[in-house]
Amino acid sequence: MVNIDNIRKLVNQVVSEARSRCPRVICKRKGIRIKQKWLEDTEGYYYCSKGIKTIVVNSRISYDRQTMVIAHELGHAIMGHDMSTNFIRTYTRFSTDRYEVEANFFGFELVFNNGEERTYDELIDKYGLEKEEIRQMGLLVCGQRTLAWRF
Image (tube, rainbow, N blue to C red):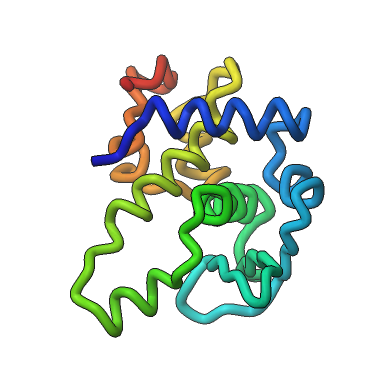
C-alpha cells in the first residue's frame, strides 16, 4: 500500500532542502545527473551505478513533458528505488506497480501541488498526461478547472 502522507512529507522535505520545486534544480543540488538521449519506446529511466545517480530523459519529448518525467524519475531516486523496474519485470515475477504509483505521486506532488490552478487541457496538452494518470493521482477535475487533490 502506498503511503500518500509519507510521500507528501518527503516532497515537502526535498523542496525545503533544495529551496525549489523545479525537478532540474533539485537534481543539480542533490548531485543527480540528467542526461538527454534519443529513446525509442520510453520517456525516461533512472539508474544508480557506482553510487552515481542518473536520470535519462527522452530528448524527443517536449520540455514540459521532460519536467514531468524528471520529477517521476527523481521520485525513484529519492525513495531508493535503485533496482530497474525493467529488470524486475523481465527477470522476476514481482509487480512494479507500487514503485510506479509512488514515483507518479511524488512527481505530481512536486510539480503540481504548489497552489496554482491548472486547466484539465493544460495537464493533458502541455504536460502530456493521460486522463488515467490524472485520475490515478487523485486530481479532481470539474469542467476545465483542476479543483484539488483528492487525497
